[in-house]
Image 1: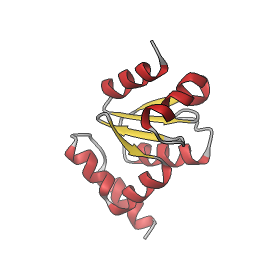
Image 2: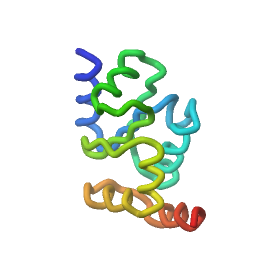
Image 3: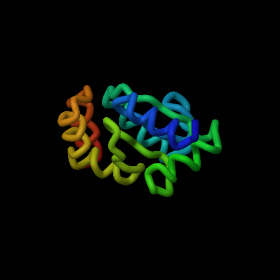
Image 4: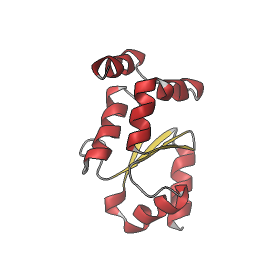
Length: 119
């Protein structure tokens, strides 16, 4: 199975997937840490994929999304964005709306606390 096929399968089988450097419990870069921190704080269940563990996946995810950077967040098969986009969407409430629209469970109070802390 090619890296792109493996990525497609992972994105289709899991409601929320974060391709990141490191893991959700031990991120290996600040950008990955920020996105994982948001998801963890909001209580979102997600599949983390450590791109540092497999060079083919690390390049394959960039080809799959046509997006040059990592982390990359997917919700119900849809590419949402990287760190800056996820941060902006969290602060605007747009990420909450995506989760709600797609039936992904998350802690609304935690999301609100993130916005209050960054107001």
